[in-house]
Amino acid sequence: MGSMSIWHWIVVIAVVLLLFGRNKISDLMGDVAQGIKAFKKGMADEDKAADLPKTDPKSIDAAGKDAAATPNANLRGRAETERKIEGSLS
Image (cartoon, rainbow, N blue to C red; front, side):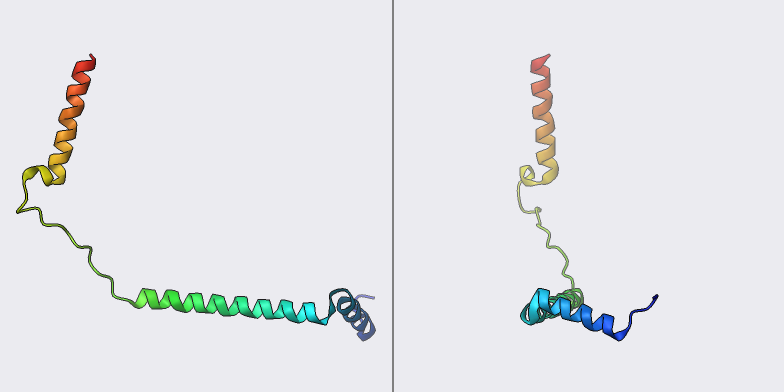
């Protein structure tokens, strides 16, 4: 009773084949195989991307430009504008 005999397995397989048909099962297995291939390809692409040398981000040299173009000057200008606006509101 605890284990299934060969006749039980034959009946189960026959019922599954009748319900789903041979074509649906083979299509399903083909879809599973394509999914596995896509997963392996994605993992290989990720490994290739990890092997590429990383480049340093390029910086902009602001030495030849006016002081207003530097980020700190922009922040100072914004702070002064905010102070003027706050002063006029009070």
